[in-house]
Length: 491
Ligand code: TRP
Image (cartoon, rainbow, N blue to C red; front, side, top):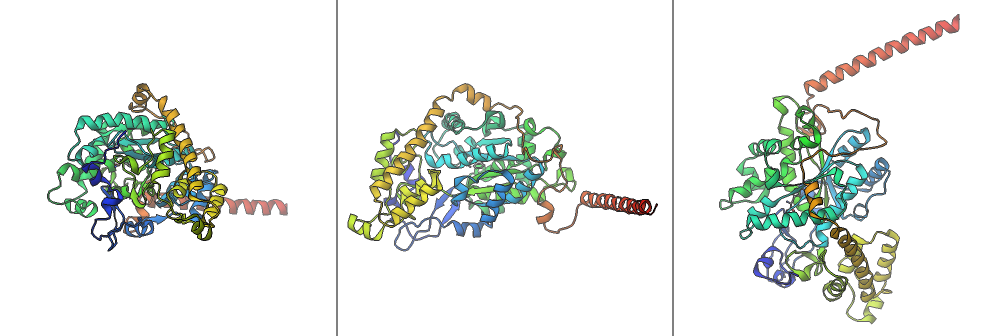
């Protein structure tokens, strides 16, 4: 049990006491820093997710998009979508277009193996990814960034992250991915061949100036860190995985991925999308497909809004190896409450669900919408007390963690070996789509639409020309038929 709140841990994710001493600053969210705005009073505010959508230039997931998702997949959107936990996206519509037409795409996500202590916050993007895989029935690749976690820590050794990597792979498998459709890989092990070619293609198109602007590097940053983005980005391209998508790059470059990730990972893929549009397959007009994204927000630490769960601070999080009793004690002892100080005051004024950690966790983990709404109303009206709310939350988390532990106990070394083996995958895609031979279009996806000049590629022009000819022929036939029918009628 990692109960040590050491100096390193404080640096990674300050606990509230440490936060209170900070100077005022704006909110920062990038792959290496997640920190809410610090006010003049030195207190950290909750992360403003709407502001991130604006700053990053992503799109909010609105009801119309959720309705379409439901229509296209025939499945009720996951509770994370219904409740704005998965709240933002890039080009999700294009992925739905493809799904409707039975055109191929894949899912890509990852994890930085930085510790053996996996907490409930870590499982959120993976649980959602599993839902996407079950819903779309497509291949999934999961990158373990052992290299990243070595490069971005002053202390960790390569051997240390290697150990985390295989344990974390077991945790990920325990989420319940279908092994026949899932490839988990470690950067250290998988680097080479088609993947490395794509890493280099990407890195050649990013200047030091751009990397600095995107990630905030400076002159003292080690060059491994500066280069790392091209590794995380290169897995967005299907051509990095010939064992899954085949060797024919003229086809695979046009297959896009959908990346479920926490919003802090967006900068990597903003950069990759930019390069994708500029990078041409063998100097033809075919661009690399831009990755689409779907972003989740963070689960607050037990200390409440403005704090983030830390793997190295036991009091900050519910860990996936916690016992039912530990869960109970942590929630009761540490979970920040939106309740009032006295029972009388609470009964009169009610609790604040927007800051109450137990309620927030229920939003993440309680499946039943109606029950959640009942709890909200009861708590806000003062009818339900903090202790009662916490008891419901404890039960829900105990169930969630116990189910995970049961699956985790069954994951052995062989399961890890299998899922990390470079091998073909099997998937079916959309059962309702017209059966198409995975057709690869030129200037795939949005490259032409968003690419800048709006000009059509040669191939698109050819296609248009062909379509015109077909339509002309059809019209001609219809006309002839019409004349024939007329003739028949007259006869
Ligand atoms: N950088 C991520 C982390 O530290 C790991 C990662 C790699 C990832 N590729 C990804 C996360 C794609 C989400 C999507 O956890």
